[in-house]
Image (cartoon, rainbow, N blue to C red; front, side):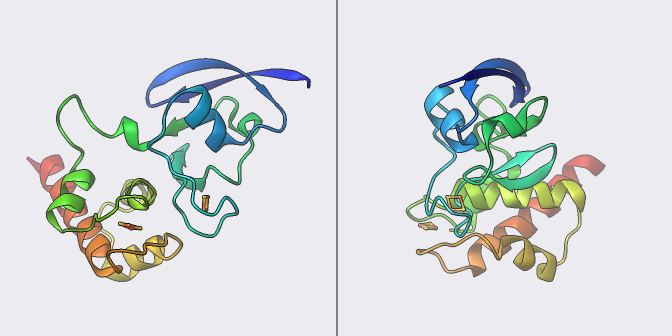
Length: 161
Ligand code: FES
Ligand code: FES
C-alpha cells in the first residue's frame, strides 16, 4: 500500500508521520502515537467519543483521514493537562460528577474546549447544543453541561486575575 508523509502539530509538538491514504485519524492518534485518550465508540460519526480539536474546532477523528490533517494543529485530551495540573475542564468534570465510566469524557471535554475557545462565556443553551452530539450512557447530560459552564467561569476568572 502506498505510503504518504504528513506533518502534524499534536499537543504543541510537530510530528512527521508516515501513513497510508486509508488511515483514519483516530487510528493514527491511538495506534501510531499512543494517544489512547481519544476513544472510539461507534466509528461512524454518531457518538462523539472520538472528538478532538483540529485548528481549534471540534472534529470527529473517526470520520477524518489522517492525510486530511496534514499541516494542522491538533489537540487531544492528553494536551490539556499542564504537568500535574488538570485543565479547568477536567477538574470541573470531576467535581461536578460528570464522569462515571469515563468513556465519553475525553470527547465531551474536547467538545467543551472548542466551544469555550470560540465563546468564553457560553450560556446553557450553547453548551447543550455543543454537547448534543456526545452520547453518554452513564451520567445523563446535566452534569457534563454544568461542568462545561463551571469550567468556562473558572477560565474567565483566571484570565481576569
Ligand atoms: S467514534 Fe467517532 S463519532 Fe463515535
Ligand atoms: S461516563 Fe460512561 S458513557 Fe459517559
